[in-house]
Length: 381
Image 1 (cartoon, rainbow, N blue to C red):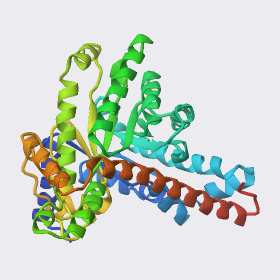
Image 2: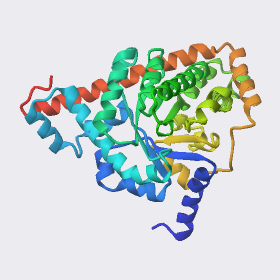
Image 3: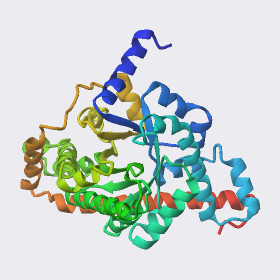
Image 4: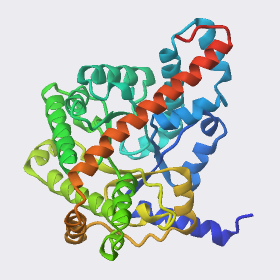
C-alpha cells in the first residue's frame, strides 16, 4: 500500500519534470493498456501527456494476441490481406488512445495529448510512398491529435516537407546525427512555408524531432570498452548526453533565427526536440540517467514504462541540465573522436540499424497476424 508521503514524492519527481518544461510521453501502447484504464491512470497519476508507438511496440502488443481476438476474427471473416489487418488494428489502437488523450490535447492547445503512429518501415527509402502512407494513416486514424512518424532518412526529408505542407503533424523519428537533425529542422521549416503558401493555419501543425539517445551510448561505449584505456573508460556514458545537448543547442539557434521568426508571426509552432530511446541499457548507469540529464524547456521525453516508473520512484529532477553544457558536450565528443572512434561512422551505422530493426519487427508482426488469420481458416496473404 502506497503511503501519502510516498505518493507525494512520486508525484513530485514527475511534476518537477513537467514544471521544468519537459512533456512526459509514454513509449508504449496496447489494447489492454487502453481498455483496462491504465493509460488514463498514467495520465492522471504520472503526468503522461502523450504516447509514442513504433513497429516493435505493436509487434509486442499484437503479437501477444491479447485483446485483439474479436477484431482478428472479423478481419479473417472479411478475408483481408495481412497488411490491411495490421493497419486496421494499429490505427484502431491509436484512435482509441487519441480519444483518451483528447482532453490533454484540448487543454494544451494541441501541444500535447498526441499519439504517434509510424509509416511502414519498409518505405523508409521511398519518398513518394512515405508521403502516400502518411496521408493514409492520418485519414484512417481521423483524429486531430495524431502524429505521423516519418524516419529521418535521406528519402524521409522531402517526405517530411510534403506532409507538413499538407497540414499533417509529424513526429520525425530515428535521428542520431547533428547534421541530419539540422536537415530535419530545415525540412520542417520548408514544410511550414509550403503550408503557409497554401493558406493553411500554421497553428494547427505540430511536430517533434525524435533524437535517439541510449543507442548512441551503447555503440560508442562498446568501442570504448574494447580500447580499455583509463581515458576511454572515463568517457563511457557521456557521448549520448553530449550529442543530445548539442542537438538542443542547434534547436535553440534555428528557432531563434529569422526564418522561423517570420513563420512565428503566422502562429507557427516550434518543432520540439523529443528524447527517444531513453531506457538505460547499461546496468552500470543510473536507470533514470536519460531523464535527469536531459531536462530542458520545450522538450519531450518519451519513456518506456520501466523508465517512467523509475523516474517516479527515485527520479532526481533538479531543473535544466542541458543549456549551459554545450562546451563540455563538444569536448566530450571531441575526446571520443581523438581515440579513433568516428562520430560520423557511428551515427550512420545507427540509422541503418534503426531502420533495419523496425523492418524486422514489422515483418515479425505480419508473420504473427498471418498465423492468426490462417488459424481462423482464412489466407492471410
